[in-house]
Image (cartoon, rainbow, N blue to C red; front, side, top):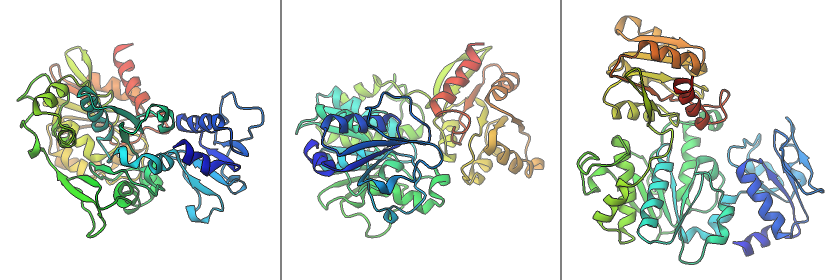
Length: 429
C-alpha cells in the first residue's frame, strides 16, 4: 500500500479534510512518507495538535472553501460536502479507498445499519482464537493506516465499514458482508435511497469470483450483484438459541443472526462447530449494546445507547424479558417512527420516557393515540430528568432500558458518552 500511496501523493498538494482519529492517522503517515509537496489540514474546529511548522490549518464555517486549491483531498468519514463530488477540481479520496485498492483481496468488509461492530469484533475473536492470522480495523475505532505495518500476504483483515467510509469508494472487498439496511443518517443522505446506495458500495465493485453474504431481509435490485451471493439467516447455526448452549453473553434474536454470519464465514476458514461455540462463549460483548449496567433499588438497568434506529430499539425490547420502562429520543434525523409507536402501544412496556428533539416529535405522535392505550408517557427535558423519572416509575423486579432510536449528536459527543452519562446518573450520584 505504501507504494500505491506514494504514487498518489508524490509531489502533490494534499489536504487532510477532518482531523479526528482518522485524519490524524492520515496526516502522520503522509508526513512519514515525506513525498508530498505540502500537507495541510481543514476542520470546522481548530485542532489542538502539534503540527509541522509549515502546515496550514483551515477552520471555521468556511473550512471547506479551500479544497480546490489542492491536488488530493483525504476526506474523513462524516464530513458533508456542500457540492457533488464530481463538481470539485481536486481528487477526493479516503483512507478506506486507498486501503481497499491495495488489500481488497485480503479484506472481509462488514457493513449494515446495525450489528457491524458486533459481527466484526466477534469474527476477529473467532478467527484469531482459531490461529488464523488476522487484524481488526476500520470503523471499529482503528484507522486502517495504523495497521499497514502489521499486514503481510497471509493476513486476513476484518474491516468494519460505515456508510460514510463507503459513500465515495470505488473499490469493494473480496468478501463483503451486508447485514441489514434500515432508515438512518437521513440528515446526511436526505433520502433512504441515497443511504442504501452508499451501503451497497460494499459489493458494487466486486468481481464475479468474490463473495457477498447478505441478510435474508435485504432487498437487492436485479442484476446489481456480480459476485457470488449467499443469503444468511439463523437456520445455518448448529444451535437454536443462546440458552441452548449456555454461557453466552450476547442476547437477542438479532445477535443470533449476527452469529450466523460469523459462523458461515469462520467455517470457510476451517473452524469447527465445537471451536466456534467455545469462542462464542468467551466473547465479551461491546459496551452500550444492550449492556447490563447494574441493579438499583431492585430495578435492572440496561444501556443500549448504540441504538439510533427503530429496528434496533424494537430488537432490544424484545431481548429483555422484564423490561417495563424505555427511554427514547435524541437528535431528530427525520426517521419514520410509525412502526415503533405501533410496536410500543402493543408491547409489554408500561413507561415510555421521551427526551430531546426526536422525543418531542414522538410525544406529539403518541398524544394522537391518547385514547387507545394505558401507557405512562412522559416528556423529559434531558437524559438526567429521564434517568430520575425512570427510577420513580419502574417497578421493583422490572428493567429499564435506554435505547434511544435516535442519534446522540447535539447533546453528547457520541453514543458512548450518552451511555456513560446514563450509567453515571444512576450509579455515581
